[in-house]
Image (cartoon, rainbow, N blue to C red):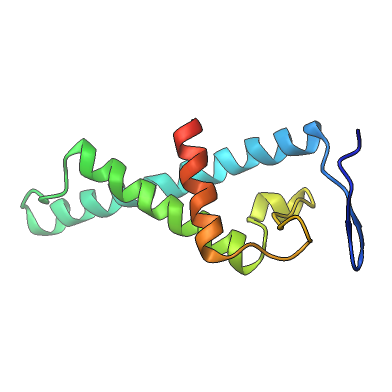
Length: 117
């Protein structure tokens, strides 16, 4: 089964598992760096003011990081159809008829992936 989808501009081909996994690994490296942003900002606040930040708890940092990831994925998937790793490996998120996904659908996709993970 090739996974081709007929669309007006031609057939879309589903990427191979090898390309998907390569993109997944690359995405993980990128997300690791993005995930350091909330912790770095909290540490900078403490260093500059000498006061503990009210959002310094583990739960708050996890929620903020999750929100950053949600914005990252939903924006890239709806605006361009690709994140940077997906662009590198020529993978695109589209609807069944080949159109870009909406912002709401991209966010729902992100929430579903978090529930699965």
